[in-house]
Image 1 (cartoon, rainbow, N blue to C red):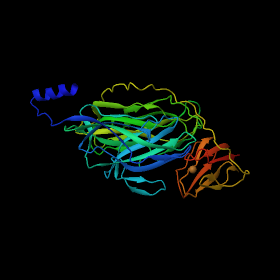
Image 2 (image 1 turned 180 degrees about the vertical axis):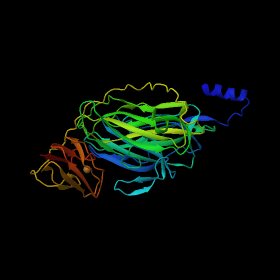
Image 3 (image 1 turned 135 degrees about the vertical axis):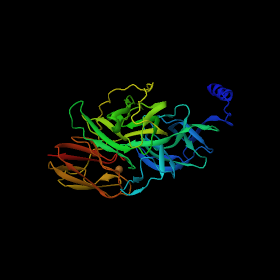
Image 4 (image 1 turned 90 degrees about the horizontal axis):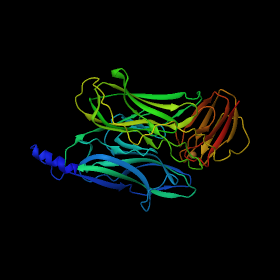
Length: 428
Ligand SMILES: [Cu+2]
């Protein structure tokens, strides 16, 4: 109805009515079913269908469905991460990506949508859209986890609000990530602070052009408190803060520390002004009273390029109606398999399909321990519980070392094979 009124107004005002202007809702899904073994974690990248005509994306959300098209509840399959990007287009903030085994490659993919457990919905304010050509190709990176002891097969299904036959103000996706340009952009919170202590990680990005940020959202993991976007060039003032809402169900066995069920997002036609040369700083803040491993800090905002005054006023943003900020639950991950074999005093071991070489280790405080990745699958070393949170990248070869400075019992597992691969290191 509003669209009809708007068109009528345009005609009255003497603007030519756009030919066949329309907003459609397109529901598409990934081309092949994705198989996930019992309690398994799968990661992959593939090309996915995209809108077949020229237009603008004004809304986007994604979920996981079974082969019958029925949405999978988190009790079956947990959506760790989905990133959708435009293939063959340079990313705004990243020239090269570092791959899973440490190699780098040119970043020929523009990231414009992402979600995890918070299930983001991208919503542009009226009049703005992410331009897309019918000839553009979309790619998806996914990480899914099976919460059940039976194999499953799923599709990623995504719903696009798409406007054709009408010129909108184009926006560019600006991906701000405290571990940008890494294919697995994780870090770990040591978690050895007092109650209410925090751990922060930041990254800066210098804006190459002026414009207004008209929409955005963010991603944190379990233990996350907030993620801030500040403008260093304007007295470090806060441009936007995204906060988590907690309350996802705990699924047993606990394979992973739950993320938030929602992160606050914004959409503003006025836009948050930024100026060419401004140094933007994104800061992820986590609870530091418990270890939180393999966490992320990402904010994705959309820039409508155009002239702005330097340090122009930031408009008040409407409250996100879905946001109920609170403190993250305290979660201690259990080891799901008892480490086996005699306790050994060694300073290195290996990981292969699907075990740690030496599963019970005793070392002196201050020792540097090395894990060697023997493949053929990718594995990682991740602290489940213990004195200091740390985690290795997921690797199929190479090695990872960590200095064990604090005494105590380090319960370790592979986050990709949580029910199979465990190790315990006692540091005296
Ligand atoms: Cu593994």
